[in-house]
Image 1 (tube, rainbow, N blue to C red):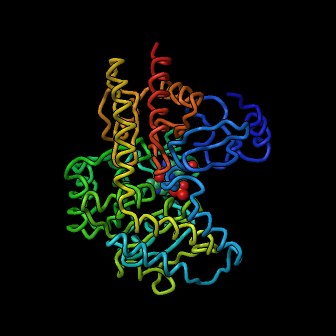
Image 2 (image 1 turned 135 degrees about the vertical axis):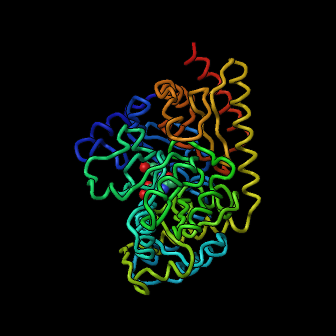
Image 3 (image 1 turned 30 degrees about the vertical axis):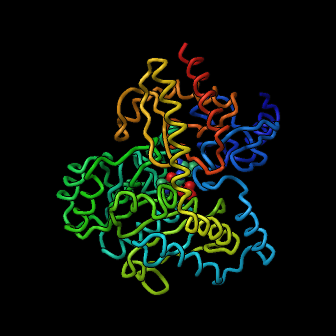
Length: 430
Ligand code: KE4
């Protein structure tokens, strides 16, 4: 594969964009080489500026659950944009998508649209603090809730990938209100709660983290958080920006039957357009301006094009629940193919899989939290990434990310992925 146009674009980009990218993880720092510049995508395929074709396994970090340029989303976007892309005034589609989200996620009685997952998580924490009149909140090491100051403490995703889980620019005043616990460690949470009586507004968690690589909640962990929050008057926030509408129609909370007080959403609800949302119990959400005192606003929040795209995708998922069985079958086929190769090669690397999300970790240790994930051989992952890329399979460019599958993957694609995986593992392990 040649990447001359991507390389020249990358050189050019660095003169006007920090690092040549608009989001750090895209820069390929964790996997070596220069980033690939994508020209277009359709279904399960990405096409780069040098006209190389890839089967893609991260789908814009989750949104493209139905594959790229899905006709329904495309038609909805084109129709909406013809009426002008933004009014800054309320529209019919915002009501329709809010009612659909309320129908699909029973714990959400009211929902507010914003423009990113970061905004959703920032707003949810502000609302929890305002509603409880408490300042502190608990997050989990390795979980990522966007780049809001108070979250960039032991953050996952690009923050781990770039080696900066604690970012400069976050003041000690901000950081002091962010309490940290290891994921899957209920005792650590209880210790924090006991040490900060009636000071903790919220616990925010990725119920199924993707941002340290896919990590699965241990039996009783999420239920234990629910119990602590009930006993202590703490607001439980599930950050389902990744898992919402992906792991099930009702997200991880449907799968694990644990009901949060608030949920943050993103990715799939925008169908590829910039959308985030936060929602939850009516009495909490009615504490948000203009009906309540907690302020939050956005020029482009709920804009007609993004709402049209999100509505098209969510409606399709709501009307075709068999999509989730289809995604499970695709995921099972790929993962069992990878496991068969690992067994053949005598390697017992860890694979965590749930629905249409999975991560192959380059360690034989089980992965239950951030400390475990940091044991991975990230250099070997980099070689794996490059080996798969040259064989026409585009993975998320970091060990500390989950893969996201789409319904556009065919049996032929699955066989190609399994073959590329086997050839790559043989190549990098010899
Ligand atoms: P955005 O602000 O990037 O839309 O959403 C932040 C966010 C919040 N919560 C969770 C669970 C998330 O996964 C994210 C963002 N996900 C990353 C991928 N791990 C975005 C990719 C990037 O930073 O470029």
